[in-house]
Length: 431
Image (tube, rainbow, N blue to C red; front, side):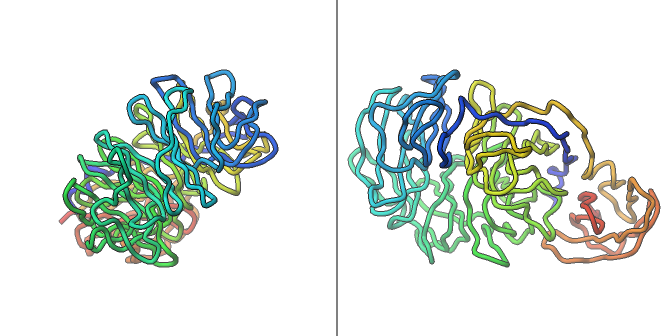
């Protein structure tokens, strides 16, 4: 528990005014569809978009197109099925398609088509380049394969389980990390996420589980020296995290404050840019959560980016300094037309509300005998204290703006305090 203390931070939810946050990029997808894969190519200065579409902007483009900063273009050789993932290997862009028996992997350098690699026997969902090697994850045999220059080879015996599927690949601490839905990696018992060190697989602190439904890991990204993992789960290594968690190489920790009673939804994609971290998915902007389908995190505060309501954000990236999101939505948060791929316009009208501020609303922090709870209202409410595995340890009626709570009987550790309506914050009980 001691190593969790360094992650205590002030977390704010910023509620923005009713205005336009997103605009369709170059007119966006016409006639319906979705955009589920994005990649920023900094070498050739292109943004790649893939998904279910035939016209984007005013260009006929089947399932894949590129944006030059001003307009959309089609590729000379177009895929036969929707593109679900991209990767860059040096100056080469690789894409993979799904949704039929033709699971194509193709390669481009700039706009020049190079070739196709051997197809998979089943759907591939993700591509990733690590140490100059191309990896693919999916529902095919073994779930995880690498390209050796001649053929696709199963990595370390692959993963297995009821689905045995890999939905995302990343890296952390010079190890390859794979996430999805599987119970074993190379014969090692794991829970939906595993690490490969070049020789063998290992469990990652107990992995991801869900007490209510089938757990899935869909996305991961390094940020501020930690690995952030998202999907559809509620526990990470026994810690009640909701469906987004942070790994420091040893233990899992929470990213949200509102992990009790809600997971904030399902996460599908993460992206980092300089000091900022972006998330998207079928997520909410409710109390303790990060945003309506998209959110921004600066290491301390969450900001609601208001991508939309209903359906899901599927992909998020940064191109030319702009945040770009691909989604299932034709319309945005306020009914603005975003046509499935949109550029974030920023926060033109800000009305900030510090709903969750652990360091200001709870003091002292850490505490040894008692804490002071600071509330904006003196109306009567119910205070509830949970531990990090979701057990309710204290529930009592309180009233007033400043309430003293005796915590001397609590074991040393980290806790979450909340009222009936909102999370107040985390606090640490010392010996």
